[in-house]
Amino acid sequence: MNIRENECKHECEYIDREYYLSPSRQLTQVEKELIWKKPRSHKVSEEEFRICREIKRNWDRGEMKIANILLEGDAGSGKTQLAKALSADFGLPYTKVTCFADMDKSDIIGAILPVISAERLEKLESQDKTALKALYENDGFKSSTEILMDVFGVTREQAVLKMKQLLKLAAENSEGDVIEYRFYPSEIVRAYQKGYLLEIQEPTVIRDAAVLMALNSALEPDGSINLPTEIIRRHPDFIAVITTNRGYAGCRPLNEALRDRVQHTEKMDLPAKEVMIERAAAKTNYRNQKMLDVLADVIILLDRTARTNAIKGVAGMRSFFYWVDAVAGGASVRESLYHKVIYKITTDSEEIKLLEEALKSDGLFEDLEEADKSIKKN
Image (cartoon, rainbow, N blue to C red):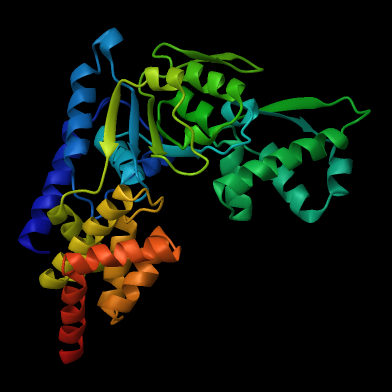
């Protein structure tokens, strides 16, 4: 480990201890495992320090408490990484919900599922039977989404859709029976009630106003959620981190009522060039500083050019990491630029010309050619 990596490691450990919000709180082993562990490639940013200071300073100040945060910026600007880092900083279990256009209120609060008879259950298809049995046997700690993700190895979005199918299936197979109903809380309710850090990704895509209202009420500082079985209060440790992209297709402006409930906002852009290089080096283990410097310059210029010309795509940190990794693996610098960066921004011929012209006018194409030559020479 070099000197800077060692400094960063101690820096991350220090911020973790310094900003724990409830150091005396007893977490279960499962909850401890939900606290995000910072990788060596993580560098504590100014945004992270600022949020930690503000939340810690105001944590016991009643109405001035900060517990709803908005991170707004381009894809790849590090919003989710920052949300996860705050889990480590505050010592809170991390979980997330990814919003989608057709969300309904059951996705916010949870769903009531009929418990069908064992006889009818055995007649169902194998996959449905397995899923329902897993739900029925749940001890109440996991949300229905998490259970289905574990059972089928699917994404959170696929698990949400599967739950809707199971609700319909269970209702159809319980007609005429005297049955019991069981409530399965959503991931939002679980985090809200147990005091976790919840990342709410892309609430701007939600179409239904009633869903937004339910989400708004959950973010009230002293709020409560009315469930079919009970009324639950907001846990004092619950923190909501809303992450949303800026100006992408399908995204609307953030609902005014939702934005009003936010107490701290960060505008997320590409980090400083030296931070970009440090993160890429740590993530890919590629240490050619001259090459990293050139690649970072290209990313920064393409990002600026795309904004200036209203090109919808973005040259972000993800593109930078994968481009560096390709070059580290021996790929052509110039050729991989298109597959790892430019085509992620756009495949429109006219827009590609604009990006190429910007690179030529800044002399960066020449720098890339020199870089390719030096790779071949070595």
